[in-house]
Image (cartoon, rainbow, N blue to C red; front, side, top):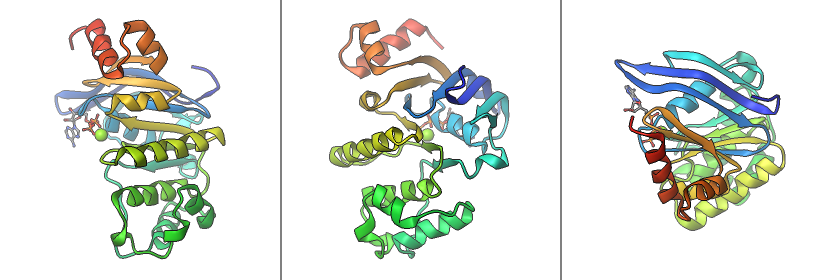
Length: 239
Ligand SMILES: Nc1ncnc2c1ncn2[C@@H]1O[C@H](COP(=O)(O)OP(=O)(O)OP(=O)(O)O)[C@@H](O)[C@H]1O
Ligand SMILES: [Mg+2]
């Protein structure tokens, strides 16, 4: 842990009934960089994200976000969050959706500015129901960007998008990180690790490694990130 960390999780465990959705996670998210949270379906990505946002029940251990306990009221204006099932109101226009979320989150901000960031200026007056999947995803991201949060957390923002849209979104994430926004982005697609400055790898609620794509390849001798992840799983032993 360093003062450069935006998020620090220590001995984080989340019980769901008898099962542990997360089991003793120690991990951190560096400021001003893109941290990828990667792991197969059910590995605990969304649970860990909810623990960081402060909406997860049955959390043990500590989660510190921007120097405060996760979920603190003071963090509301500083943390943007897009859930896995992003909520967009189909009958509202793009601009109205963003304005609504800004009011809901009590985060006033420049709507034109966030529309431009996600390249939706031309669609501002369109109703959300007329948009494509990728455009809807960008509306959700724009809603989280209002008020210039210090930390932006996106749960599987690229799932279901075609490769061109995925590449476009990762370019936008990079620009946000370059402008100082700390990004935490989950994905179950290993290839997306190449877009991240550092990685938190999960499997069945446990931390497999905190690493980078380059270190994964170098450490395992695998050029494919899928193969490198599988090799790391074998190294880290059975669950
Ligand atoms: N509401 C719930 N009640 C009980 N168990 C749950 C609930 N939601 C998730 N789980 C369990 O918690 C574990 C972690 O789930 P989580 O949704 O965090 O995984 P994930 O990595 O986000 O998966 P995905 O890639 O499919 O989104 C899984 O074993 C899942 O079955
Ligand atoms: Mg999930």
